[in-house]
Image (cartoon, rainbow, N blue to C red; front, top):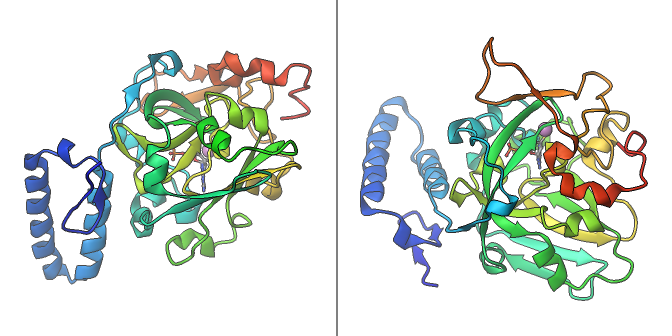
Length: 325
Ligand SMILES: Nc1nc2c(c(=O)[nH]1)N[C@H]1C(S)=C(S)[C@@H](COP(=O)(O)O)O[C@H]1N2
Ligand SMILES: [Mo]
């Protein structure tokens, strides 16, 4: 495919889909902001950086709908999905990632897949974008804190990537590691977690078709605050299992450590399947608040076992899900 460079030096994978009017208006807004920033003393460099962020957020990603794996529930507003986030590398307030994640440099970006594999690989983000056909899947995301969203993600089943590296017979788990760079992620200075952010799945969970290697949302590349340029989305587990801004995927024979389990093992288990029958030690998990539906008369929603993704139940047959929470 033809890749063009835009004036800010960012590759636009789908230039034909950006209408001249949008480009023109964006440029006009940029010039207006430069004029305004001169008045308040914001540096040109920072303005250019913010501009790059705005451009980046506007890159469209073509994907074919996957209705079989999509919920028909109303989607969360883009504004809510991008301004109410957990991404502790950029601060612990819900509004911090939207405010601070413009310092994340998402290109160039590589992901290394190694460990218990016959063919270790390091893939550039452009190759990841073309590894398998992109699908749009509308998933529920349930945060362990008791809120949920409905987000149209863009990506493909992680199994496509794992098959390429040819797992060895010893591969039983998969570990996912987030970027760990203080110069790009101001939140890493706070010892809220034992950085880097690491998460893990059992091999059969990682190979399940629902497990999405995610490169976009709402028809465009991932906004930085949502885990650009590549993250995981595991819809039947609490949101923290879905690691953002991944740089390494390692197959292992032993269960990997995970950042949240390390920080509070009695609160965040390795499995962390959404389960209304197993309360968090400090709150109930029986119900949830759907973001955008708040208001006095709006009742909370009942949380569903496996977040409603019953097709994964067979992965856990014979397991005590109160013990393996
Ligand atoms: N690297 C990293 N990944 C992360 C987190 C984080 O703090 N750091 N937060 C998790 C949590 S708690 C949730 S609920 C989801 C939120 O994803 P969203 O902001 O795109 O809705 O990201 C998860 N992935
Ligand atoms: Mo979360």
